[in-house]
Image (cartoon, rainbow, N blue to C red; front, side, top):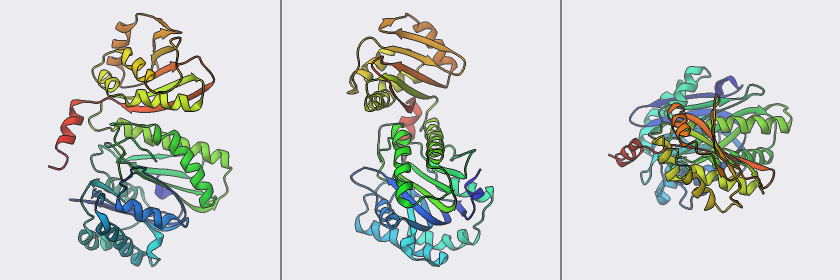
Length: 378
């Protein structure tokens, strides 16, 4: 299900020297944003515009982050919202905005003013239009990210590949649904889903000043809350895995699954500590079964841990156990072959201390990540 398969959603986009994507989407909205203290001007304006829980349109520019641009950046973001509101025939405060790209560069309002009318004229609700929007909002992405529910009308589109350590990558995600909930309920469910998915994702440990996740509902259908919450988390988790898979220069994506923790918080910080470790990431890139790096990251995570833990590498078809309740199993040779064979797998850890569990998502760190980011503004 594309976003355009949801009743009342119309979109379009262009990708030239910059990107411009728009969505016509009248409904109730909830948003979760970056916790970076130097939030972009576009985030500041978006937070203000969605604070009343209502939206009629969304406009996204890629290429310039509009972050660390001061009052000029605020004015630029408001002007862009005003331009789109005139086409939608609505109040400019009913337009949400998001930006992604190079920090310190303002939105090119003139370029948007020149291109917006044609993009709006071509708006539609086909998969072609959805693909145009998804492509328009990308930067260093190798592919757009899209996911949907098989049970309810719920669909998401996102971008993100680098500067990914959401703390609510450069990450933007827009989720659309017909489920009837008020803005407060949507916000509660969105925050929970983000905490368990995007906030458990890391590519490079950098939290962008532009992270924005919006959940928009046209209020057409009644859906049980527990069903909606479960499907929302599935969709967000799928997007998070796609972002890790598309991590700048990455060749492998992995999940860290921690079970048997004393508390849920312990499980979370343990899983994310391992997924964030640069030494773990580089070992995985080199197919080096250096489980000592995993143990080290676990030990400094702050979680309650003891020596009597279990550690294994697992994929759909195989499992290599490295430690069983504190006993080293001398399987490094098999683990190396496992890493050579698998580009997507799990690092599973059982702490044997309780019943809590959590998972995090990461990717390897490669030469190409350094190369790409050393040339980003060139």
